[in-house]
Length: 373
Image 1 (tube, rainbow, N blue to C red):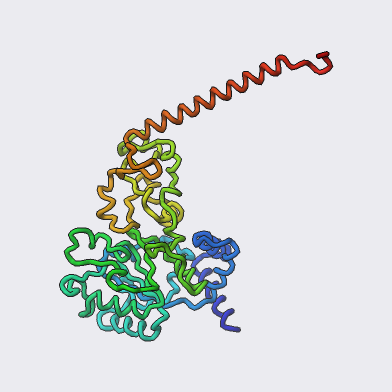
Image 2 (cartoon, helix red, strand yellow):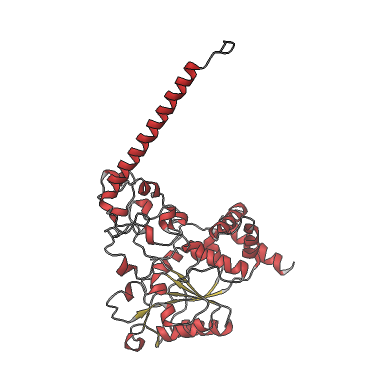
């Protein structure tokens, strides 16, 4: 049996052991192709790569964080293909989930980055404090800054997962007493850096990133903030299920009011979806069961830089409305749009009636077939 067949058989046995059918697996690969904005035919290529390609070594570092991204990474309530792909990675270092501790754990990290130098993926969770010579976060007697620089230098790719690692997050919010920095600022010049912000980042997007890397051997297309376009290429507002209510000027005005109960737009309640890039409406959370806006809570813009400073107060609407001009008063939009829509319908109805009347008049004077003119 050749290596390809052996690896493929192993993966299929693992799917079966976890109760995932071959059909589910192929469906997942098709979904990944869609999520990555690839043509459907790439689903079969993804399937072959996931089954047979060697899974890269993963080194996961946690610094100034709340472990929310780790929780997102481990959140699934039942085995899915995404979980299996993440589980089958060679995760050689992750403080929260590894069995080793103390000197043994740090030796694992040293061995992994030495053995697989230039080939492993480094995932960094949390911001990196630089104040007091890095003393605000030390592991094994070394500062987070020192560890990050060593690990990132030898990585094939560095993934800054979560908003703290991507942009500094809450620790870097003013006045920033620890001197917290993002990975990009703490370890400048990383050409292979990928930012995956959100508070926390979605595990499905991390799975898609791994799938893309395994399939094509390179990083996906990134935006100007080094975020993968497949996950951060569009505004939440563009795919929001409440977008039609926004366009119609139908807003919830207070928690629990009639508009809120009817599922109207949450813009007036502080929703930052119109200025936030992420695919939450498409991938959802908890196996796509729901997402914050679907539950009746506004987006707080957690995937954007400095969201803790720029997006607050979280329950107050933005001063300007995208698409309606900088001087538009939001408080008058609902009434104005409603009146406008009503006027448009009235005009449409009047024109429709006029056309019908004209048509009846023409039919009334039209000579019957066989009559002389």
